Image (cartoon, rainbow, N blue to C red; front, top):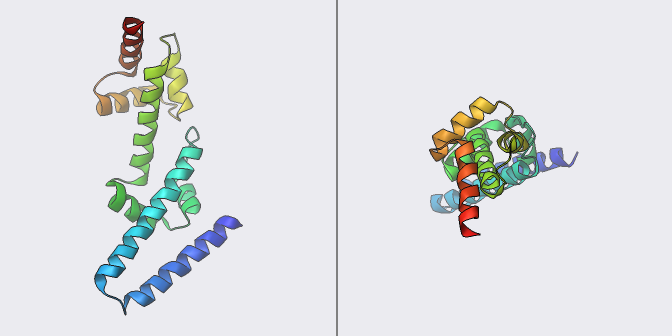
Length: 152
C-alpha cells in the first residue's frame, strides 16, 4: 500500500510541477526536473542495492521508485547515461569484480560469486565480464590471489 501512495504522490507532484512550470522561468523548471530525476534514480538504486542477488524486473524498479517505466528510463538516461537494465547489470558486474578481487582462489569461487550477484548463466556472465573489464573472471581471481601472496 505504501508504494501505491508513493506513486500517487509522485504523480501529483509531477502534475503540480507541470502546472507551475507554465508560470515560472524555464531554467527553474529544468532545475526542478533534474532534481526529480536524480531522486528517482536514487530510489531505484537503493532498491537495486537491497535486492542485488535477486532477479529484478523493470516493473519492480518502477514500483519502488514510484514512477512509470518511461519516466524511469528517461531519468536513468539523463542521470546515468544508460538504461536501468544496463545500470543494474553494470552495478552487479562491478560488485562481482570487487568480490573476486577479495576472494580466495578456490575451486567454485567464480561460480559462487556470479550466482551471489544474480548471474545464473555463467557463460554470459563471463562474456559480459570480459567485455567490461578485459579479462576473464578467473583471471581476476588468480591475479588478486597472486597480488595478496606477493604482498605477504
